[in-house]
Every structure is written in structure tokens, then in C-alpha cells.
Image (cartoon, rainbow, N blue to C red; front, side, top):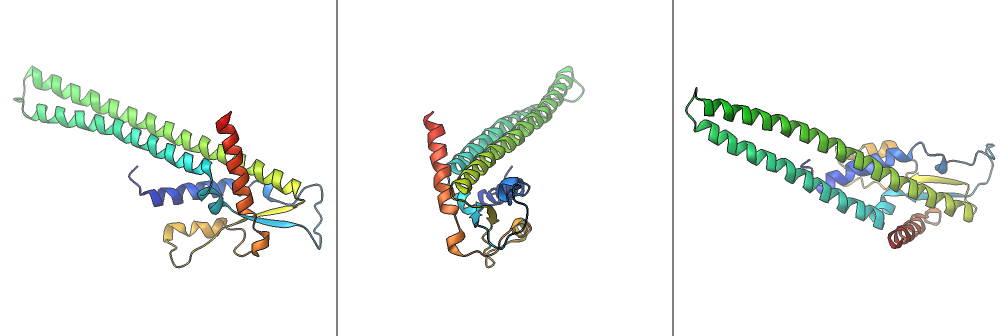
Length: 205
């Protein structure tokens, strides 16, 4: 749990992008499956949308808070274990107090492992549910915008900064549907605004 904020961002972005791969919202309408000579196409840069949306900012802040709470709880267990170890080492061997202290240490170690597993499972469920919720909101916004503006195909665009790309970022290329698109096809800013409006409305309610 001691990853840097940048690395965590990249991991979460990767998870989010993978969730977007199988969505029917980003494909040609099934009502007209034939390939036509002219269809209205748009692209969305998901990284841009997420980095500029209130919902993603709120998610990252809450994630950081939950992660810190997780760390603090486990650190409390580690501190208690350290105190018990010192007390145990200062006791004379073979006495009843030494045996009881050892049993107390073993009990706390078992509680530590169980609590760590519970918190880890809870945190992972939170991440999955949060990312799924964000994705569903984004999917709905894109679908509504496309229908209102007569757009028949929305592709996922992914900006790649080759000068700064790292080994762990290479997965971006595997999830990038569009490496280049004319600026007039990019509706990322419009989708971001709509997503922020949706978030504001939900926050007010």
C-alpha cells in the first residue's frame, strides 16, 4: 500500500480503461450493422476526462483517505506487537508470565493477519464499486451526448507521451483504440462538462 500517488493513478487509470474495452456504448449501433461510406464519429480521451472531472478528483481523495485509515489501523497493530515483543524479551525464560506473554503475542499476530485480510478485501471492493459507478456514469453521459448529436460511433482516444512513457505504462498502448484524431472529432471537453454537471446534480440531491 506504499505506492506513490503517480503510480496509483496509472494503475487505477489502467483498470478503468480495461473496463471500457467491452462496452457496447463505444461501438456502431446494432440497428445498422452494415459498414457505410459515411458515419458520424467522435473520440473521447478518457485520461483527459478523468483528470478534469470532479467525480474522479473526489474518488482519488476518498481513496487516499481510506488508504490512510487502513495504514493507521495496521500501524496500531504493529506498534502493539512491538511493545509485546520488548516485554517478552525482558521476561525471564520458562516462567508462567513468559508463556502468557508469548500466547498474547501469538493471539495478536493472528488478529493482525485477520484484520489485514478483512481491510484489504473491503478496500478492493470499494475500488471496484467506485470505478464501476464512475464508468456507468461516463457511459451514460457519452451515450446521451452521442444520441443528441447524431453521433453513431464513439472511439476511445488515449494520449501517449513517448518522451515520458515508462515500462508500466506500456499497457496504455494495448487499450488505445485511436492514436490520432482530428481535433474537431474530439468531444472530451464536452463529455467532461456533462460529467461534472451530473456530479454536481447528484451532490445537490
